[in-house]
Length: 314
Image (cartoon, rainbow, N blue to C red; front, side):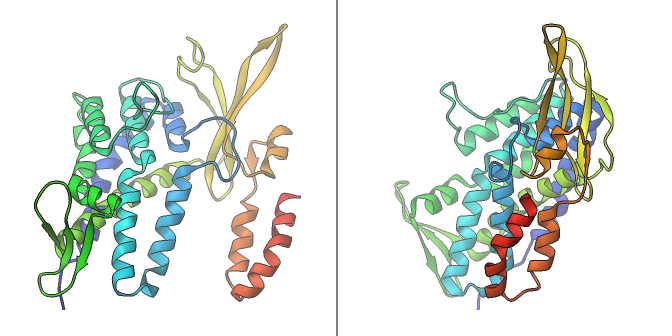
């Protein structure tokens, strides 16, 4: 049986050590742009519009079910998860916007698109992060991305140009257009997959640690850019047992009367409360329902789910 070392704990500790100072400095520089970066604000949206949440769900479910997968299926699913994590735009966008924050630049929705608004390749995203962080003192934030990315490894999985090899010298074989076969050993495969997972988990942990710091609504100042040249008051909207989910502010004046602007990532039923002026929301009904449903037999849980959904959204 092939033996290899599980280096995931080491990578997670290392990557948290790299990213944590960036989060801390971004908060010191501009709390407003930090929150924009954490929430990846694109306007008002309900469930089902957040790519990073989908990545989290995929990761969590694969991790939870991994023991049920057997032999080659288990190996393949981890390889496919690697491609998902290394390609995930939200990782690059979060780090890019935190770097921009410490450079006194405003949050923008997409930092890794070309002039035609098409996603860059992974190598191009890494190069852009390198250029963006140059001279900031936080150049090492690109290290986890470089560590986790092997072009040939990624391309072989993405294009199906690989096979699994068992035995004492087993691993992942690659036959592609490069012109010669390549064997990634079990240790090399394990290290690359674990680096991609550690990159994701380090960013996920820090993201929610900073979101959860906001226990109560408060007023903060926006950036000058958001206020069209002048910093304006922003009132945070928070959910109990979660943290900040958005904010509201006076967005301008119509015939002399102020109108409100809201940028918030709320659950559908929460919008009624927000529209009525509530800034401190109760705990998520969905989380509370799921906490109960998980104790029910799966067949019963499926049957009662529609009724639970109606209760949540009423």
